Image 1 (cartoon, rainbow, N blue to C red):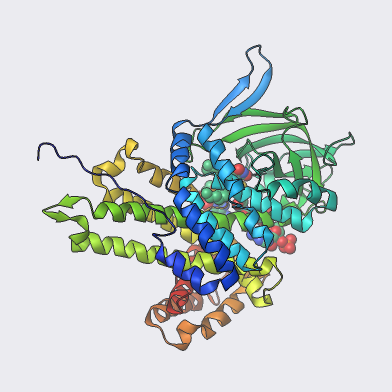
Image 2: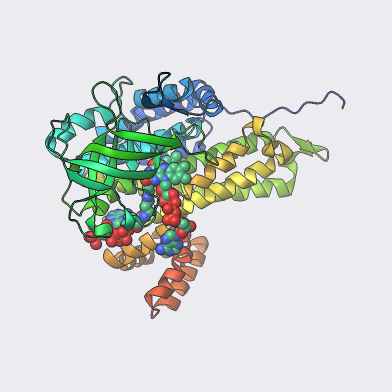
Length: 515
Ligand code: UCC
Ligand code: FAD
């Protein structure tokens, strides 16, 4: 076959091709929510494979650039982003990717509807979903802890559907001393009494080592007010706006953009705050506790985006498996190839069940319709969900790249990006080990373990003796039994295995009960 050219994989409307999503939403959402949400998702599923996809390609091909000086030597620290990146921001505003959750038009189901939008948006967004995650997290923190005038100032922008009005937010926690452990944060907050558009109370001085979406209009960050104690208990949460009324940076100097393994379209900078006006949110010393409400939202975003990423990888691999021939038949007709793909679909299904279960709990919490037990479960399951889906996204991306053979390793197919971008899901917003320890923190401080055990004892999988559930439940109980009298260090050593066992047990129950 001298003139043979392989046909590449093709995507079609990602809502219509996703029967799992459709069936889940049709089962869960009340009729009035279905009426609005399903047609909206259908529309976004079409955009995800048409205009969005071409903008994402453009954004990936023209990564952001830092321009430190103007032609005459003035420091400007401009970050130039591509037209594609800007268009993807517009789509996010127009489609209400953040706003839908805060309309609360359908009570707790608004969060589910919004997460379904995010799930379709993210894989065609060149990771614009990252700034959106931080925007949503900031909106929630401001909603919960912001003074009324700050809410009035920021929320209409963060929740806007008008691209001209829409703001994104950054979340600046990591310093050179540490991202997991922020106790060494050396950004100082000194008293500030100049007039400011947003009621600045402090001026910040310090260096932030990773700041994604540096083109955002506002950020939430951690700093240490004068005289505060050392360690993380001395940190407070601050709101700042990056630019003043004439669009000049507010005493912020951008050092450089990071040269990263993936997330190439996303600007991630190192910067210093050189007397940047900022407003304290919450009380002094409450910084970590307050920023945790941002983290809990961004961690669920990370999970949904990881899920969307897995779906995209599997869609590409499935389509290709019907096109590529080897040894006289299409790949899908080879039993070993087929079962490999089926096993990945099973992993995906588990992640899907977990993601939307937790998203619905979040929705219930936000509208005040959550039981005390479920509130604790939401707290403990959020880190578990994040770490589990991140690892599965890496696994699935790696397998899918392999399913394309050599083509999977060649840049202009776009496939290597799947693997590069997947790796970040397990690093930012808390690494796997740090999140496993966060689960232990919730077990201990919020008494989540007995509540979780109670849930498993009484769940449908247990009542029906569902074999998949019983196998996971038995091994979780065995692990817990071996730890019953163990010292804290022993719990730490096994925290990761425990987190995976919890996720496997819960997902088996959700699948047994058809979610
Ligand atoms: O990476 C970042 C942005 C990336 C871009 C966004 C992408 C989003 C997805 C898009 C996908 C395409 S921003 C940086 C993220 N950084 C982290 O995730 C930090 C990881 N480290 C931790 O999670 C640590 O556990 C810390 C820093 C949160 C806490 O460590 P500490 O200093 O040891 O703090 P404590 O003492 O354990 O906790 C202080 C208080 C406690 O409450 P009280 O005082 O009542 O005892 C904790 O129970 O904070 C509470 N707390 C929490 N509460 C700590 N974590 C939580 C939590 N998750 N939820 C509720
Ligand atoms: P470390 O904290 O030094 O961790 C190194 C290793 O030690 C990890 O494997 C970790 O699991 C392990 N470890 C640490 N503590 C423990 C423990 N107690 N037990 C067991 N193991 C442990 N940060 C922001 O604040 N804002 C941003 O916008 C932002 N954007 C980012 C964008 C990208 C593309 C990336 C890659 C990172 C970004 N980050 C951002 C930083 C990110 O949140 C941190 O890199 C992450 O939290 C880890 O912190 P670290 O890099 O200091 O690693």
